Length: 156
Length: 156
Length: 156
Image (cartoon, rainbow over all chains, first blue to last red; front, side, top):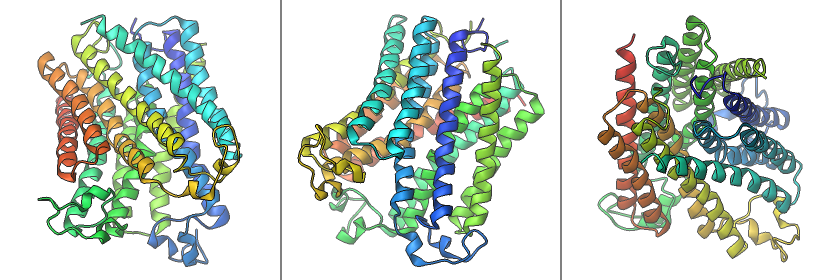
């Protein structure tokens, strides 16, 4: 049996956690669109000031930063700084044949920490709350990566 | 036969689409460099104002945003918000053993939508064109991710 | 034997290089935090001006860009524009069964080029040094991707 297969319960946990994170990240793009359409604001390209069905009453102020849009962009940027490294660290970690229960805690724990991070950031909780949730996810990535490297160095 | 192998035609389609997307993304970095060198503008670091073979006549205005460079940076940023999630969703989708024809449409369709998105953005087409092409790619990622999660939950 | 396994020495080289790159990328996040805490500056969200244990003496100027923080953010952004594409190109390249020695040079060479890129950028070396190191990594990604696509097209 290949370890990267849906017959491997560790891989199933990884695939589900990664799937939730992909949908979460894509949702940030859609949320940016929702905020831009709702407030008709926070655009970035000069051509977005042309009159179109999506922007019937253009105004130069639409190109200024709008905090209601910028907040979602910051959340999304935080995803870009984190999720790709979870995908890689998690995928390699599956190949080290970790204990199922530990792997589930790490994969699902990461996903939960990122969903809570979104909730805290979107509702503008104080930095200390956001930072704590971010730290949980970051340490899970570091833990898995070190496990991968120890495993890999054992094969040299 | 492992599903993640060049003997699997679904994987071959994924590898080709992912390869084109990697080259596309790397090309954005090079295009940023081309624009910066061509217009000697749009630099970002204070040390870029030092006189060097690549910048023989430095000027403080070189650190100001230059729309001809910023446009490419926005296109590249849009790639960063999309491609990593295509790579993961597509790779996991290969492991669900999807029908070959459907997988080819999804993988190649995604690649085409992103190349057209570049063409529309670089030539400053109206937002509605850009948004439509972006939406195609985003929905392909969502479709594949949901297929992965349904498949994964069936194994629990 | 699956090619994506720690029994494959090419994969071991990939896993080690990818692991170092994940840790490098995560370290950029932590370095951003270190710089923000050290200089109490370079914050981005309005709520970061609330008085908390991590920010006992808030001041509106804390939301202005601070070059000592922005430099790390630019380095991290450069990672985001590069590492995800190395992960994908490298992972697919492993599946083409390349010669071990060549693969090791490419994977480890990439990792070394990015660590040196960090050293050059963080110490504000001239653009030409930074650009040369960046180019090495970029060409390694392009080389591997072309090898993947040639391999893939041979299977059509």
